[in-house]
Length: 444
Image (cartoon, rainbow, N blue to C red; front, side, top):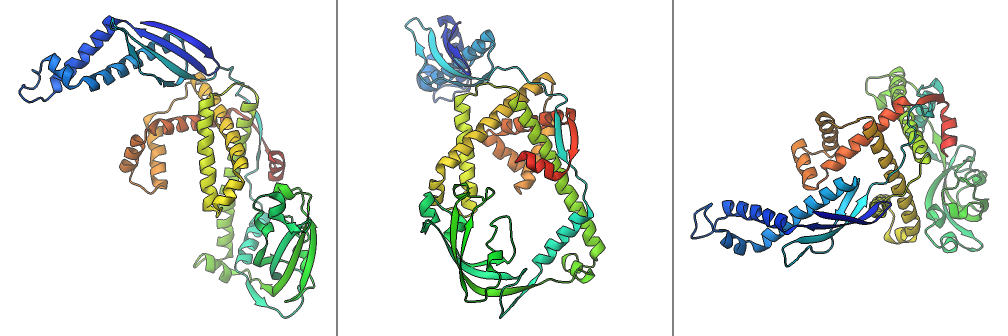
């Protein structure tokens, strides 16, 4: 078999393969023989159909199987000969048979990137403490108390702690905000029947507190400059004019924190029981936050430690998948097609950034798995697929068949491998415990 590799570059290579005529003839004979053994043709006993009859009857199928088998064999030999790490093989043109019977084809190979694996042992990372304080438990109980509050209509001016039900519009430079920034402005497009507490808040300083002293029917113009934390980046530092009309004044009445209150949430239980459950829930949340922080920092350190080119085809495929998922989540949250179209550039940019990070992380972790002989066994697969089936609320056997039909088993195996490898690297890391606020500031 004559094999030559051309245009070998980062993540791509072109392979030309020529299979000798005798090899082609031998493989064709094997395929014809198998067809003859299984063919059911009227007038012939099973297994006794002449080869010429079989070749004429199944000419197309035999040639397709012949080409497929020789292409697979040729690519396997090329990969072995050149010691290539191949991700995918694409044969776009029909293989050619010469008059002498030799077969030639060209394959485009997508190659895994080649790089030096960065140091992954003893990485220094930080993680928030998973300890739960009494203050945090009390804060959670206070949030529950707020949820069960009652609201009385009041015929008086708004005071600190009251809730105002308002209608408002928002403009900048005398024009609607959406018109100025050229896309959906969400909250800044105005609201009717909007509830806001009369207090200063970090989301929009001056909005709630600016209503103090007003009563139902009053109107007020609020001029507020959006701060650097405002979710819509286009208007940060921009002055927005809110024309507000107060429709209702609500006084919040909080329930008393006692065993009766606890029993509403947990029948036959008291406040001590409620506090214990809340403490356990907070501990679980903090443990997850700590685990996520460790993983995020390990991934960041690994990806920053080495640079290499990613296969363009994989990046494009991953980007498209990410963009579709982001759009689907947007629709679930109420985004219209128009809003999605307005944000398409941002969606594509975010999807591409995430695709590059995901692929780079996977390649690094796969190389670490090879170096450390980390493997996925049957028990690992059973546990993961069982969990996936349970989450999808489907019987295990049916779910496995669906995965097999979608050729997704290998994807699951790779996901398990990546998970085991990241756990290995985290276990080897040197972890310093810090206050949660410190981790948030650094992540930001």
